[in-house]
Length: 263
Picture 1 (cartoon, rainbow, N blue to C red):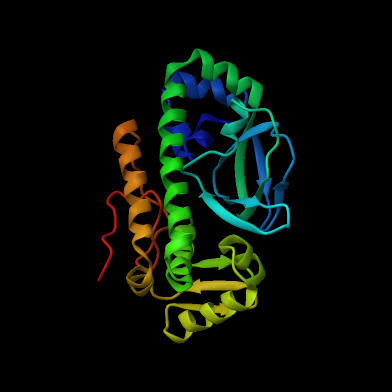
Picture 2 (tube, one colour):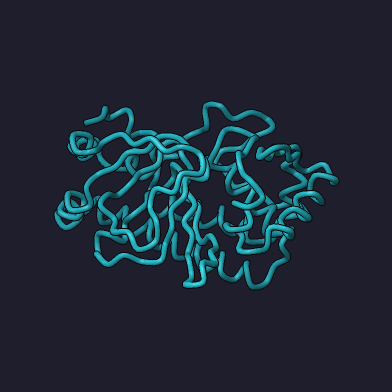
């Protein structure tokens, strides 16, 4: 059991009626994930549905030859494991804690019972699922169409939007898996971004130095992703919150207005 205040740190849970949140708090359990932890491997059955609080999760699709690529990033704005409410079969999806932190988990059967009975949960799940489909479609098209440097700028911004820090703990090897490219290509692209003064990379830590430049270099898909989230909030009447630790150098996924892409 956790306090209702803890539920407020996840946007989906925060949007639910207070009475329902109090009821869910009795069933939710805290979960801690470390940086880079693979907490769900391919072929594993989902026992829980997870609501991130401070962690950031990469969801990767893995082929039979072990090639993998990221298709979604999920932070405190979302939820992981909703597919288990409808399909019990394991799939070729690996879930990695891109940034360690805390989360809340609930047994999938418990949430499924509530989903079938409570309209407020149904509405939240449908709104969120539709937005995730839009984001996945955007990612697929982006991977086929845009240059690696544009995609990397978009990826860096998307991760930082879910974190109050300018620093991302990430290796070139991990980034190559997430972006679905060779490690050498990642090294060359990060080197170029560093030479241009956008980021600094040292010993597994990537620091954002200039968000304005990253946004100007990112493909149109970054702004499109922000618009998808804004539309979901508008349709689902999600509350908007500010990031308590945000500074002039950082941004937060819970921004009140979308950032216009600079040309």
